[in-house]
Length: 210
Length: 96
Image 1 (cartoon, helix red, strand yellow):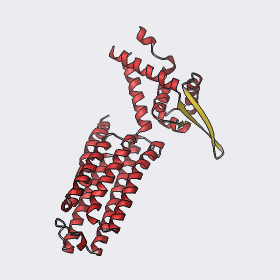
Image 2 (cartoon, each protein chain N blue to C red; image 1 turned 135 degrees about the horizontal axis):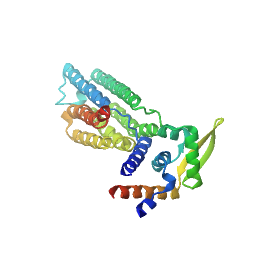
Image 3 (cartoon, rainbow over the protein chains, first blue to last red; image 1 turned 180 degrees about the vertical axis):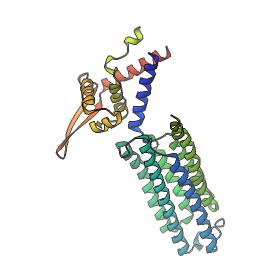
Image 4 (cartoon, each protein chain N blue to C red; image 1 turned 60 degrees about the vertical axis):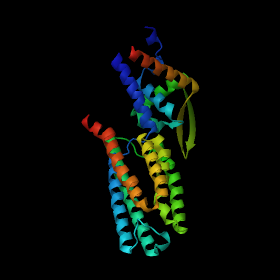
């Protein structure tokens, strides 16, 4: 009798979660995205160095056009790499779990991510256009964090805390101009790796044992 | 014994529990999506949904998408109350 009731309640919980939350998100995509971000931050530091500007001192008015365009290309490559790995690992994970990828929940998740991200992307383009270079990196952290907090209700709730951390780092970075690259590497690199590992252990490794 | 009487006979099957669970957290869910969540056959799902509809626990909406009909379901206020009472009864029984 008790066993039956327990199974009933488990079934109810599982159906509620599966139908309203995107649970194919793979922790490994966070780890890989984090590694790509750290490599990207390293390359960015070398681009500054090669240009003769010292990142830590940072006089925005002295940044030359060529260096800025190199940094923008690097940023786009990092974004493309992180997105590709994220999609690959998540698709793999959903196949392993036997779940469909393209559902109403997925669409809601993507929409709730997209609104803050697109607003943030346009904000950053405007910053480049207006030559407010120092706030681009912190702004990416803040808007990304807002996107995660907004989307968390459609996936694992851990994502919400990751979002709060990213927002906090971004805000702090806005006030410490010389260290934005460091904060950026911390937010997109280290935090992604830590959260990726935590989520992998919590949701994926456990199932392998069953 | 009285606790067991609080359990709703309409929710005895796992399929019906599944249908109600999905509808509690989603607004309108169509037949195909429901089938994917529950992993059951068309006939099985249809008969259980019919039973829930007759009890006025779910609301049914039919519309045309191109040439095909699309049937979607939503939980009623009555259905939500009955389902919550059922879960509470299950939890109480479990605690003993």
